[in-house]
Amino acid sequence: RTVSATGWYGRGKAGAKSKLAEQNAELLKRPAPKQVEETITKDVSYLQGMENYNIFYGRYNSDRRKRDIEPAKTRCKVALHAGYTQADKRKEGGGYFCINWARGCCFRGKKCTY
Image (cartoon, rainbow, N blue to C red):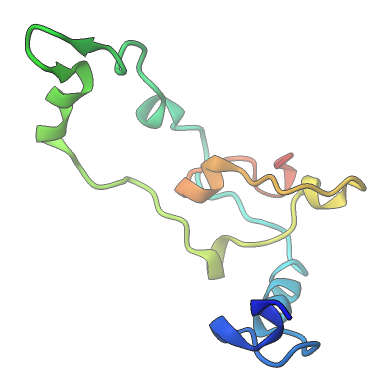
């Protein structure tokens, strides 16, 4: 028997429909809303050269930015932002999700392909 069949980790008795599956089915009945009106990926995108190591100073080039860390401008609220998208209509399925949705800044909503 596997761990999931024993009822560990809040999964309940083997064969029983989990609460998580019920909540997911309920959330997928509505379309996903837009989290922001326009893209803000410039603020959260990768900067080239941030992985370079400076052997003279003994640190990465990205270390200087750690002093002025600010909180995220957007957040994902699952109860509010969850819903179906165009990706849910695909037949091949898959385990993809929108990284912008996870950050709380997806501007496509139900038209998102992830």
